[in-house]
Length: 244
Image (tube, rainbow, N blue to C red; front, side):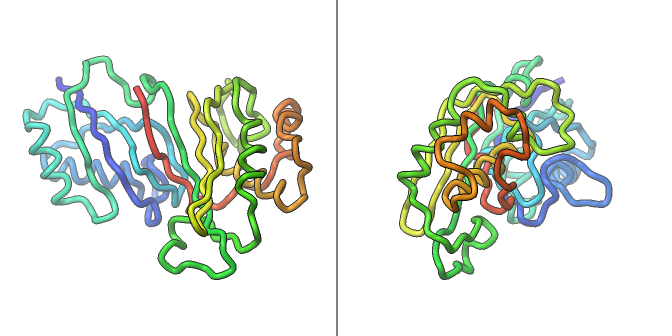
């Protein structure tokens, strides 16, 4: 039995997230369909994380346990030939038998892209949160620094999550600007359900004056979801990097 590590990227606009669901098209299902078309067997694919509907990935990792003898380079070419244009396989390597795409992951980096202009961008609406009011990226960068460290992020987890351990270590949180594009970048050893999108919503509500500046540490300490900001739209969110 071989254990293959695939690195893929995808535009999540047309998908209901990564994980297979009933009556909904997902990235995992689409990749499994393509793999079955090539090796004529429906092998299981294990992803590095779940993603919400409409969320994208510049880098997403998954492993496949298979008895197929197809060479890695040929598998990459074959998958890219049958996959839809919004999913691409970037690499495939042989992994150790005990490698697990999710449990062996040491850290992930997400970026959230905000198109900050009074004029919407028709070429970015599927890949940014289009927000027309002024954002001070230097000020928001200073506020974002309060996310860093090892904390219980219950206040930044959406209701309905079944995760028992809500402690995560954030190693980097920053806000930058390139023209009209404002980007929030965050790295951590793991993320809770909707955590990044709630972080972004909190920063925007600080910008709007709905949440007082400098209170992110208090919000974290409270553990109360009602104290943090709204959940930002999924279109701007990208899983950007995965490290093992």
